[in-house]
Image (tube, rainbow, N blue to C red; front, side, top):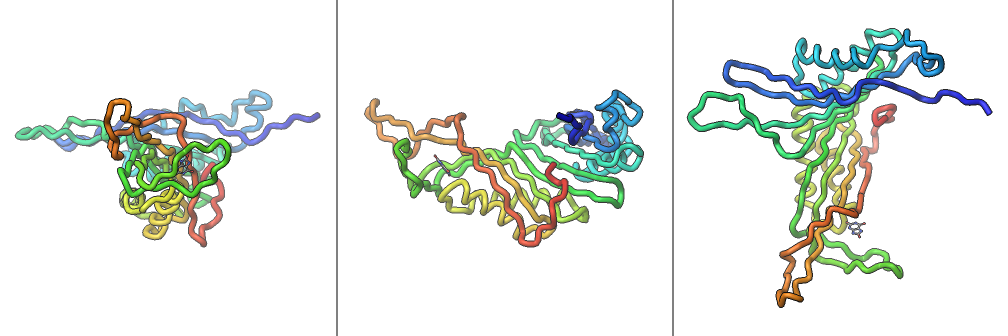
Length: 294
Ligand SMILES: O=c1[nH]c(=O)c2[nH]c(=O)[nH]c2[nH]1
């Protein structure tokens, strides 16, 4: 039996970089988690321990910090392209760079009467994401933007009934339930020509939220599709949305032992197990995804 080396990559994962921009007393923050993965002529590294083709992961981490100083950070997609192109362009042994970034949002704390603008509070749990692949400037490239940990809830306008009932089914059909989820959504741009990633992110997020709120839901599956559909309908720069949405079940509590009714007011918010609904929505003309999701 012969043994061969399969696909491989390597890089520095989860470099946490924070940049403070100072405009007099007015400061602003970028807070990122950057993961780099490189691939290329690296087989001998794995097969025989020859490190000649290796750009150390430590140098990759240093590059993230140096680029944050030299170029600033800006939109995470732009920063990811800057890094990915640098690695693919500058090292003859590296033919493919994958840069994944998470951005943690901070909001300014403004004290009435104070000119100081250097205090911040973490803005909830939501995380903005970007995933860029580059084989070098002018060569094949893909970009996927997204968000995760976006927790949303509809307190009505959600039903669930009409499903299969087998010998193990105990779930009662419902015409009015709480629908809650924690959205992970990633959207593939058609190409690398998106001019304004800040606007694209803001508007795509708005589409997802408006569709979640505006869809009278017969299932979380139907809501997921409506969210992806609205984003693709309104954002021509996108061609594919992939979502994962756990059903954060809210169960009616039986208060009858205490002589109380419960007209859909008091719920047990269970954290597990949870239904996990995952789906992809594409435009009919979506170009081949190539390595975009790898
Ligand atoms: O929106 C839902 N989809 C399901 O597939 C499902 N299954 C279940 O038990 N509850 C729900 N809710």
